[in-house]
Image: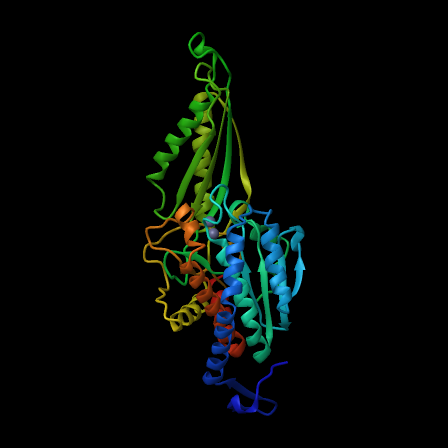
Length: 415
Ligand SMILES: [Zn+2]
Ligand SMILES: [Zn+2]
């Protein structure tokens, strides 16, 4: 039930059966102030929660403590919480309100091996929770539902892709997530991406006494790298191919019988990714033929989709961030590329994945310096501002159905 008082209705038109009305900008502004104050009032709680997750880093699908703390906070603040959704023990869905629109704010809370929270997912998580709790005020005032969806294992396993396959995002109108970074940007260029695991099997022999008897699995791997390096000259500038050798033999005096490597292929769209995957695979097939080693390969089951930014939604978020005194650009002038499982969600439902600055430009994401930034005062300020802007963006959408229609129309046209 929409709780709209008579004095805030502006009569725009009339036909036989119903009145068409909209809510005044003044009323929207009033509720935006309320949600901003709500986040601000929780500064200490959210800051502590963020630092607690930061100092207890957990790898993908093992985020038991983080999921426990986040769901408890949501439950204590009036959300109905379902834990272990999609048969993933550390995934969750917290809901508040009724009916449409259904607006989801997504949380990530996994850390990186050795580096801890060097991607700052503690900030994503507490930002989502803070925005969700503040958005209750918007939903109370104007109707609709707010969800905070806990999405584990972004870094290593593409948890959202698994959750999407299991229907977690089927009934949403909008999905939003904010990631910490080194500048305030409302959209992001995230590439389609798939991992490839390679093994070559050769034949062992004494490397000096009888090298002619051996088949060198390491050489097959090295030839593959050379072929990929040659290929790289002739691919689109937005595509990426990179990899590592995980097994290069046992001893220098033995012809390597086995080699293994992991590779990632990335492209701006799925069609070019498919084209590039075939070319990359041919590099390995060619090396197998040349060396005589047997090739075995496996593509990752999850394939990251490119990010489809909803510009109407991104603009709202940018305006709301600007109202907090931050300078936000709509797109990244430096065209930094990565991939995220949020890309797959953005193919299903209108989405944004903005970045909020928590460190200087020189600091690299996935570095110890970025991990420190994720626990800094600037990190907490960024988290709070992003939570405020997300909650204000929720106000924009639940207060004005036309706003949401524009967002959805853009999404449908981009299909
Ligand atoms: Zn990361
Ligand atoms: Zn990340």
